Length: 356
Ligand SMILES: *Cc1c(COP(=O)(O)O)cnc(C)c1O
Image (tube, rainbow, N blue to C red; front, side, top):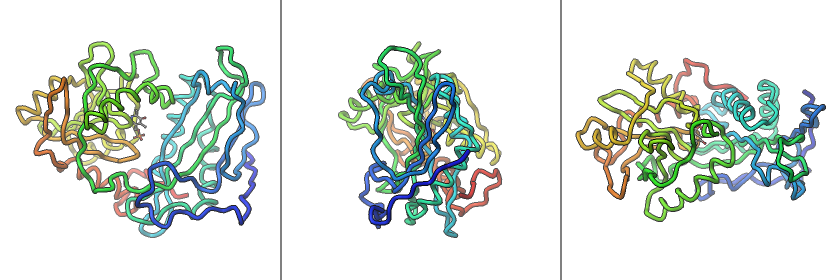
């Protein structure tokens, strides 16, 4: 794939934030973006790195009406030695292709887009922040652009990658969050698109998240749509429980997003010789376990926060404290080790880290 390069003219280059403290997640973007078009009969073409700028889309562009789209989220990290690296980036593009299949979008060549991403990152390398715990968030996005409001599969697409410097997820340190179990709404149904990273899933979750926030909870914990009994996941994180020193997470059923952090926690746990299990886990089992002390930790896992300890669960207007409400040893160990690998402080026995 030939990537055309159009650099931003010097006088229009922006200055990256001097410090990431106070910068709201995902609100600042680097100087350049990668774009590529797809059309029926033509395939992928017009691969170009160009100045970050508004897109020109007709109001009839299909994505704006029927949400035929896919996105991804990964990060570039600056290691202690000053090198820039990615964490398991192929997994993101492979997952984007699984989303693409489900949403009838054209698939990407994983190696070609990864190479284009690295080219973009080398050009905008000044945007990878330096402070501890910061990173450059990467948002690949694929949208339907055919200008037609008839309901069908689009014949034209735009793929783009934009970059956003982000601070540490926990501005006040690594603190447990309060989450609300939703028994009113569901996120995804069997046979639906829950496993896909596609916009509509998040639009459909907004109301539940908004109601939870009004009640003082930062996130929603989703239950299965059929019985409203089995645990699925949190807003943009998978969920883990420590039950009698065993690491338990819901098995992938098609309605849960298969997180790369989730996969990494499972692989790391196994590597350490811990007992790790993927199975169905009911809300009753968790609440009973919190009461009798067999459930000692609950934590979320996702790219944004890496590991997010849960201090309180609320279900049917009753609150349940997890352990003593503080970060537990397992959450802490996974957090330290995963971020250690990402920032080059820990050995990387799995080859998860890739230089740019
Ligand atoms: C992105 C996402 C996750 C976490 O996936 P990672 O690959 O670990 O970042 C979990 N759940 C949902 C709904 C997500 O969108």
